[in-house]
Length: 85
Image 1 (cartoon, one colour):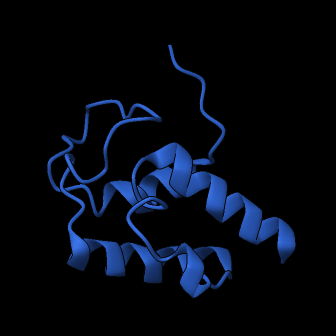
Image 2 (image 1 turned 180 degrees about the vertical axis):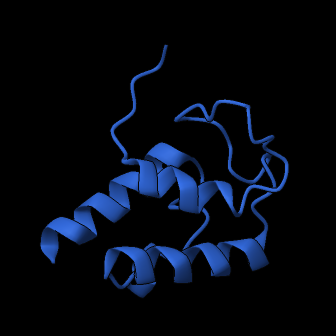
């Protein structure tokens, strides 16, 4: 089993925007979010949800496909923004 660093809230929010990931399928930390259905419209919705849930604001420099490439990359940015609080 792959160990993950994110919390349950993150995975719940993220799964809402991955239309190609079945509810009972595990999410590998390095799986491509685009391949799981995260398109540009879903990315905007996910960004808004994460900012609201975690009380953070993504700087323009983090609004790119690299940030949203995988769950582990996205969580790393969220965790860094939360720590910078």
